[in-house]
Image (tube, rainbow, N blue to C red):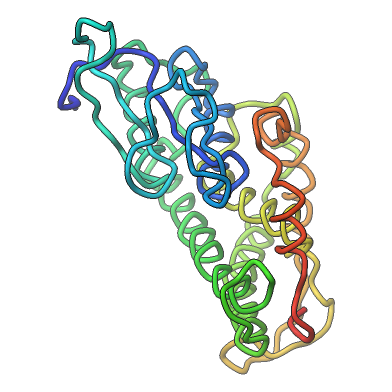
Length: 280
C-alpha cells in the first residue's frame, strides 16, 4: 500500500473531541499506543461555536464532516509547510488505514499491541459481527436523540421511543453471543493489553456517549419481559454488557481529558439531557 504522497509526520486528525465518531478514534489511538508525534489531534470548535481549529498554528480544518485525517506530504514550500495534503474521511476508514500502516510498519508507524481486527479468520469474523451491531446502535441512536431530546430538530416522542427499541435489538444480540461464549471481561481491566478489539472500542464509545451525554445507561435493562421489535417476548437484561462497560470504563484509553475538549459544554449537555415526556 502507498499513499498518493510520500507522507511526513505528524498526521493531523481534525476532531470535535467529545463527539462520538472522533471520540472512538481518540480511544483507538490510545489503545494502539500511537503517539502524538505520529498522529496529532487538532481540536475544532463545535459547529455552533465557529467550527474552526482552536489552535491557529495548525492549517484550517478540511472540508467535510469530522473526523478527517490529514496526511501531509514531505515536500514543502518556501514557507516550510507541506504543499500537498491527502485527506481521509469517516472514522472507520481512518482506523482501517492506521491499522494497515502499523501492521506493515510504514512511514515510521508501529504498535506494540498488534492488530485490533483479529489475526485468524474466526477472530476477524467474531469481531466484525459485534462491530456491525455496534455501528447499528450508533446509527439508530440518531433518530432517538433527534426526535426525543432538545438536541434534536423536531419533537416526535413516539418515534424516539420506537427507535429506542431498535437500539436495544443489536444490544440484545451482543449480550446473547457473549453469554453463550462466556467472554471473560476481566481481560479488559486497566493495564492489560492485547485483548481489546476495534469492536470493543466502537461499542464502548456508543455506551459511553449515551451515558455521559444523554444520561441514558443502555446497559440498564428493565429486567422485565418485553416485546422486541418483532413482537417476541424477551427478558430485557444485559449483565454481560454492563460488566463490559464497567470494566472498559476503567481503562486509561477511556478517561476523558477535559483540557482537550473531551467533555461537552454545559449548553449542549443540557439540551441532550432534556428528554421529551414518555420517551424513556
